[in-house]
Image 1 (cartoon, rainbow, N blue to C red):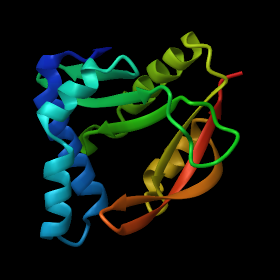
Image 2: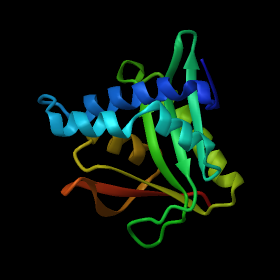
Image 3: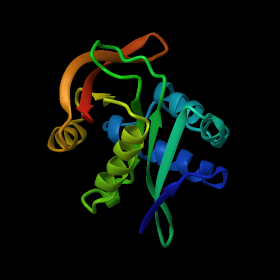
Image 4: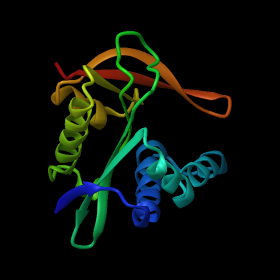
Length: 169
C-alpha cells in the first residue's frame, strides 16, 4: 500500500470512489433521482481530469495491489465560509468504507498536511456534513477544531455542514 500524486489515468477510479463514498455516507435510506443525478453529474472522470490539470489542486491517492482505495484533494485559494481560516482547503477526502480503520485516512491526511506546510500555510480547513459522526470523530481525534457552520447546497436545498480548522503552526 502506498501514496502517490494522482495521474490522469486515475480519474475514473477517483470518480467511482467518490460516488461510492458519497452515496454510502449520505444516502442511508435509499437513493432517489435528485441525489443520484447530483452524484452522477458531480463525480465524472472528465471533471476529475480537469481538477488534476488545475495547479491550485493537489490530489494524492492511496493505492493497494488491486487499485486505488482512497484519495485526498487540497485546494489552494479557497475562501473559507468562516473567518480565521487560511485559503487552503481539504476539499475532498474519501476512503472506501471497507478500508476504514486501516490507516489509509491517517496517511492521506498526513500527506495533505505536509503539502500545506510546504506551501507555508498557517492552517487548513474543511467542511463535513454535521451528521457525519465518523468523519467528525476522525477530524477531532487528529487535532482539528470546530470553528463554525455553513451549508452545502444541491440546487436550492441546503445541508448543514460543520467547518473544521487545523493549525499548522
